[in-house]
Image 1: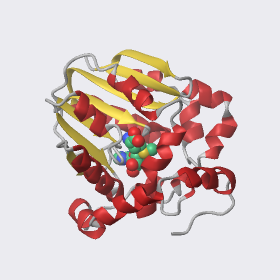
Image 2: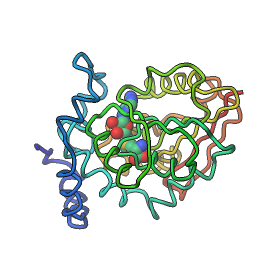
Image 3: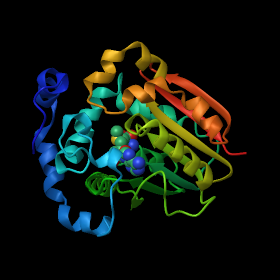
Length: 264
Ligand SMILES: C[S@@+](CC[C@H](N)C(=O)[O-])C[C@H]1O[C@@H](n2cnc3c(N)ncnc32)[C@H](O)[C@@H]1O
C-alpha cells in the first residue's frame, strides 16, 4: 500500500501514532474478514464512485477509504484524534437524542464506531449504517458481530440513498461532513430531511467549525481534502437552508461539535 511521503502527518504524527497502535489486534481484524467476499456482496458491479471521493487520498493513504489499510487502521487511529476520550465524544451525540427512536440511519458509518454505540443505547431500534466504502463496511460488520448486536449495513452515497421518504426518525452523521465538499454536504442534508419522518431528528457530530477556523494548521495536519471548506462554512445555516427547525450547535470539548435539527 503506497503512502505519501511528504506530509506532516506522514513525517511526524503517523510514526508516533503507529508506535501506539495495537498491531496484533489490527491483524486479527484483518484476518477475520473475508475481504473479497464482503466487497462483492456490497459493491454492485456497475457501481461508480463520485469523483470527489475516489480521487482523494484521505489521511495520506493512497486510495483513501477504498483500501484495506484505511479500514483496519481507522479505529486504532481515531481513538487518538477525538480528545479527551473517544467514548465521551461519541456519547455527546447520543445524549442529544430527544425521543426513543425506532428507526435510526447512520450516514457515513465507516467501521460502525458511532452505529454500534447507537444500537447499544437504543437496543429496540432498527439501526442501519450506510457508507461508500465496502472496506469500512467489512470492518463495521466485524465490529457488530464482536459486540453481538444486529445492524443493517448498506453501501451507497449519503446524498442519494435507496431508502423511502420518511423511513427514519433519527438520522445521524459522525465525522462525515468534514470529509465532503460543502455542495455535497448540503445535498446530504436535503436527503436527510427527505428520509426523516415528521418530528424526526438529525444529529451531526463533527469537527468544531469555529475552532477549526482559528487553527488552520490543525486542518492541514490530518490530510483532509475538504476540511478547510467545511470549517469556513456554517452547519446551522446549511441545516436551515435544508428546511430543518430547532437548529442548534453545541461545543463538544472545544475540538468537536454536535449539531441538531428537527423536521417539523
Ligand atoms: C471519518 S469517517 C467517519 C466514520 C464514522 N462515522 C465515525 O464516526 O468514525 C468518514 C466516513 O464517511 C464515508 N463517506 C464519505 N463520503 C461519503 C458519502 N458521500 N456517502 C457515504 N459515505 C461517505 C467514508 O467512506 C468514511 O467511512
